[in-house]
Image (cartoon, rainbow, N blue to C red; front, top):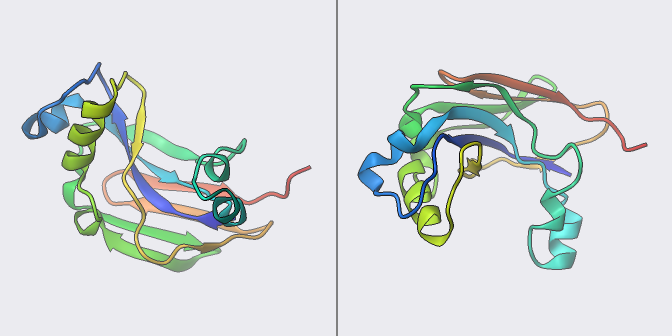
Length: 150
């Protein structure tokens, strides 16, 4: 199981074939996300669906921050207080502008839909007892414990 600190775009209206220059108008806001991934299943299956879909995977929060332009924000992931990922949203492979416009050409997005924008270098494994913090400038800190399945 790996952590992946990410920026999440929260869609605020029905969005289809959205023009890139109006991408901020489509958002209700943004929040932090930990896109937890089971790498063993990802490798076994050859794709992501099962590896990212377990109960408790992908915690988001701590709240939706409205009015924040997420184009260039500091993003950091810490595990047990140790910095594991540190970058800026402007250094991601795909910009939020591109992602919203591109995805809205493939499917209709509805209010409340989330678009996770990718993770910086430095993903790594988690163990029961770990504490993960994803912090994004202007948004807040998402904190989640890692607990073994019962």
